Image (cartoon, rainbow, N blue to C red; front, side):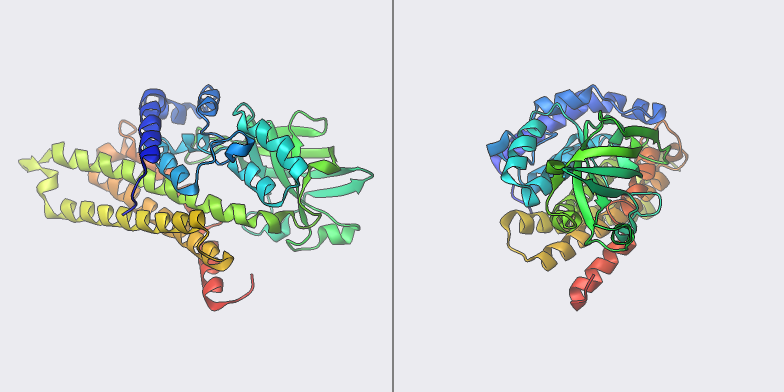
Length: 390
């Protein structure tokens, strides 16, 4: 079992209080209205949580991955749609830490650490989801600038972002830029207020309805060369380590969401009467609850084994990549099962919007899809185990 430090306990208690005060009362409303509570962005920014992974040297809290996952769990128990508030800027900041120059670190990280500048990451395109090699957005060098053209879709929190880390194909010739592969992908920080950038629509989704998933368009967008992060053609390869760190965050959201669904189902089973007694006294319900509890604890153990390995630096890249994929895949499959069972235990009440479990079930599904589908995660795990390339 994970042993918490005093600091972790204090942070968890603080986040739990904020969640109960600020998020719980509006969780159902923001889902139904499909509106993200933007007023919470400055609050979580002031608390240092939106930028908590940024090192203290650059103005952040410098929290480790384990602590970030513990905090994200607390939000996910109540509203998966609000989980981006924990570490929103991490997926933009981590690649800068890994492959950026010192000048870029000093320029961008203190800005993001202020907690006033929301960011997003632009990878997914209409023809390139898990198949990153199929990206079509291109960046053509023009003197000391690049000219970007293309589009992104399903960009989480895209509509709120001031800056976006965009991945685009680069190369000296049209053939090189059009070639399938990941060794011709570069990373750029772009300003959403710049000429040549525009937001498209927010995708209407089955779950996490309050979280914007936005189309982004680049139309002859000029980006200074010093906004390219890492070497040309090495942007995605250099950022893969940050993806390995974000998959456990997805896993933490899955564990938190499952806990929220389980706690609702457990309370209902104690109170709901049928055939003269609480439904929790029937063995069929007892076995469902027992399975749910076992699955959650097993998933949590795998998740925090993964985060501990990353925080301690005790595994090589192959081990970390495999374990991160295991954690993401196992926990999200578990979450889908637990939330579905929670709806079943509540019966008609579970299908009603009066209880949150139908929202939990809808919200759970996307975690089996984004950050690499669970089929892709199984490919990664198998290839790491067999020592195969890819």
